[in-house]
Length: 345
Ligand code: AMP
Ligand code: MG
Image (cartoon, protein in one colour):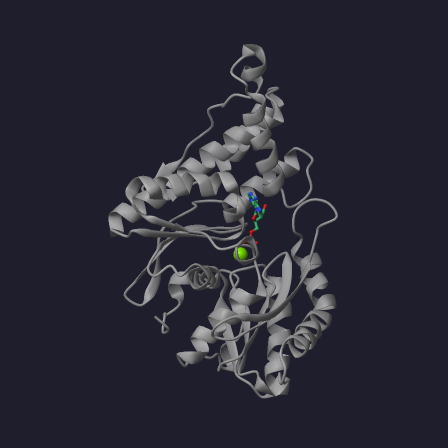
């Protein structure tokens, strides 16, 4: 049995977990919530630094209570998010991981955060070889595994969908994270339109917004600005949130379908925090159903950033002999998934 301790802390969530081949033994997290505005990298890093000791101790204590015979000496390796992410946050977590690895005399395993999202999804859902739509705060990509790497077929040309939603929510005066609040407002628009009261329906109807797809790449910054303008022009929040979601998610669904057709894959996996959105799930599920493909989405705790996914990818890498010497353990804020040689598939 392989036992890996994994630590995630690329942005808002500091999370540590102990994972074996067949399950997540224990996980503890500590969420950084900005007082105002978006995620401030240095503030988030300070949050992580002040919570690291507690989070790691709590995971070990929790595992001891959950598992008879568990000992810290049984840990085979220390996995950490090496990137992509916010520099100060990454450095804080990497420093803690190095200290733990040296103290416990166990190997260090630097993992790519995006691939961790994919692998935990495949593990939890039993997807074999899916086209992956990975949508989180800073990242939005369509990927497939081919010949030893996760290849990026399409991606955002500017900001990630999560950042676009969060930015627009902030413009409306809503606190971070904005994605779930926009989802609620958008759902309210559908509830308001009855089909009976024409004047009322118009207030909640779809507003055309920039739809930008180039091949399998896409863009969200023009859409975000146009949504802000629509709000200033007097459209209701509900209508703009609804239109924002419909436009952005249709773009994501279109490129995912194109990737599936291009690669001839009959599975798709949704990954990343924005994947929690029910409207996005619904659009993708319909698209997959219409193509006769299977749609997979893990439970929400494995969609947003979590320590279990880092521990699990660490476990896959460890088993295939991929560990990280200290001199190569520097953080990689712009780490792309296609830089990683996949040795475990
Ligand atoms: P991650 O970095 O993968 O944890 O994803 C974080 C992003 O997911 C943030 O930008 C959130 O606003 C976004 N998010 C979380 N829940 C939802 C939701 N229900 N709908 C849309 N976006 C969401
Ligand atoms: Mg993430």
